[in-house]
Length: 100
Image 1 (tube, rainbow, N blue to C red):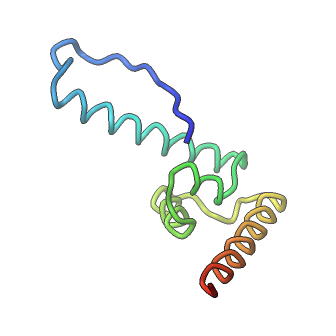
Image 2 (image 1 turned 135 degrees about the vertical axis):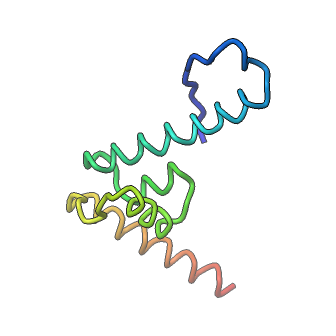
């Protein structure tokens, strides 16, 4: 995974504390999740890409979208096609590796 940095301002009094560490971890996770939800809603990314970015199985990503009241049925035909091909490839790979 490629890493990027975000800069946020926090009160000076929590600098260097455990609270700062917890706050930054939650902010990182929340920012990434919200960005993925927004990009998905815009049609910029497919469910497969969203799952990959958030490092979760596709099924979990679909549930995640539901928790955010986002329908999975707003994908473009192209994005849906990419997901179908990715699922087919994953299925073939799983069958190939399990037959060894």
